[in-house]
Length: 339
Image 1 (cartoon, rainbow, N blue to C red):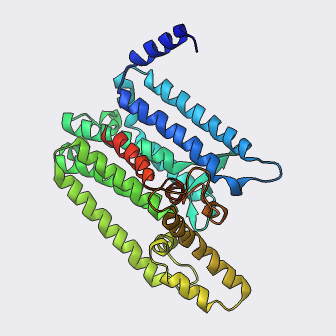
Image 2: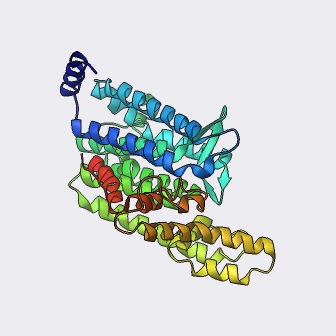
Image 3: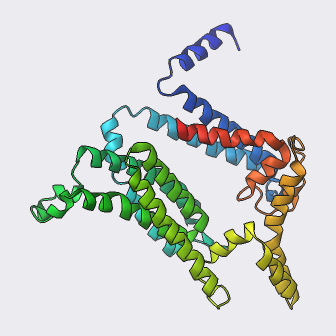
């Protein structure tokens, strides 16, 4: 790299608008994702697909993501972003309903549907769309901005009840958050709780009225307890409800799964019970083997055992290879949220 090129690059970085810390965090997370995917994707290889092919596919995703960020970054009209944000809940609602109807069920979880051969991971879109919507709703409540339905001539003079503060909070915050949680939880309980937590944190950051955070947190807690109760009652029936609750509980407490394995009568039942035990146990083993310093990049052994190491169990793999340095990844996400 010539001095002139270095000078131009430094000039570009120095005059980059926006929060430079956010840009640095974004680029570091992208670089780390490339490293982790390359190291953990051994089981994804086949006769026609090498680790280099997987790496190139991931580079395409990273590159397109960066282009998308730059496009959004160059939209300088805040009012345009505000107007788009108000549709976040409607977009999320439509996508989640489509997911329930057309989504692919894998191990009791429904996370994506396919269009023209491309997987649409709905929960990732919902995370961003609902954060934007919640931000818009908080701004609209504070500045008494009218809802679209209030601006419609069809309902002129018939929606006076929406002027009441409590009603507006119910319609603009409570119902969208709880509806999103229930629809996401139908496909994945863990994702439902995670997305709901993100929305509650957004409300906590964007308002000084903590009573809304406490009320929503309490309602979500009641719903979560209700889901666990329904699962506990129906888990031994032919069609258990909230099956993914059992999956989440099994990753923390494996007593029931051990019993299922011990009580299995046929070879197929035994193998099925063993598959459900293998992932959580191997993930814990990966964390234990990583110890304080980790085994080092590319030295993981559990990646050959856990089928979804490059997906659900990625963090256990990171701990195995990098030890205490894995905390750095969490710090990056927390720093991004804080900014």
